[in-house]
Length: 338
Ligand code: TYM
Image (cartoon, rainbow, N blue to C red; front, top):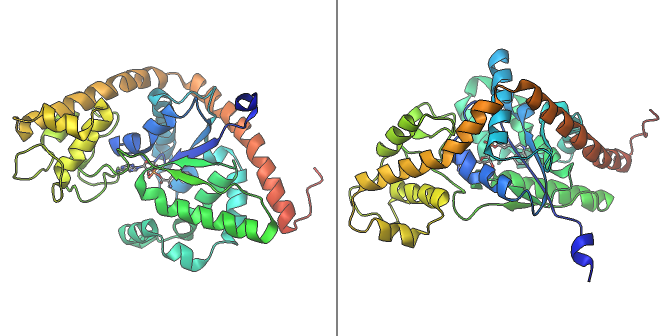
């Protein structure tokens, strides 16, 4: 049977915002999966810089953040030869499809998005329309590539559900146009929590830098943050209800070592939290070390970065324009004669 070779590889699309620090949460919840899926699937990745301006950015810093995030994701292991990895604002189809999809997305649906509610509360002085319609741009990102799967952390699940609803609605009106994508959420690492308030997710926008580990943090900072992580008074390394801090550290340790919770409990059977936190810190440092080394080389090589994001944008444009044209035609726009 020849089917294995001739079958279309499933398509994966995902993106991350280049809004400053990339955290261990981003890495374990999403990026680590992106890297591991590159051989099995046809992957396309992006830096979602259009999404980032929903919060006011300082231009020079924004430009630097985008370039640094690009280099860091290559250092994590994205291979742009295999998986086009582009900057969203370089591929004009995203904004164009987002506008069309805005007209197929209901106000009430957008109003229910928890991320909108959180961000609107946090940036009460700038609740702009982009912040509100952000999920339809995200839907455009995904649907342009006819993605089957979208590897994300658990916090993006609601946006994925809305993307599915928009795709199904459009397909229902015009006939099959979009692949309806599924979220691909890892079993371990889908929700890495703050080290200081382990009932809240680890976030790069946390004002307390001890609450998150950045992928580019120095080893001594990673060790300090892990040692200071909030735990409980039980002093027994096992997961359980109400043990949010320990559950979180066990999740992190499991992701970077590959050990199961049972194996971790055994390893620390007669040891206290101090030993455990030190072991977590050391394992994270060792896991991130090769990434940090590759990053230090890549960020110096601007020409190479430019070549990678330019070639990737060209590939992404040629794929996504096919979907956009199909959509424009179905909606009834006059085809462009140029
Ligand atoms: P962003 O930039 O906030 O986060 C990027 C990815 O990291 C995951 N993540 C986490 N996973 C586990 N634990 C955490 N504490 C944690 N924090 C973040 C997120 O779930 C995400 O997968 N809207 C998206 C970017 C985006 C996108 C897309 C994603 C734009 N277009 C299309 C997928 C497909 C966002 O702001 O992610």
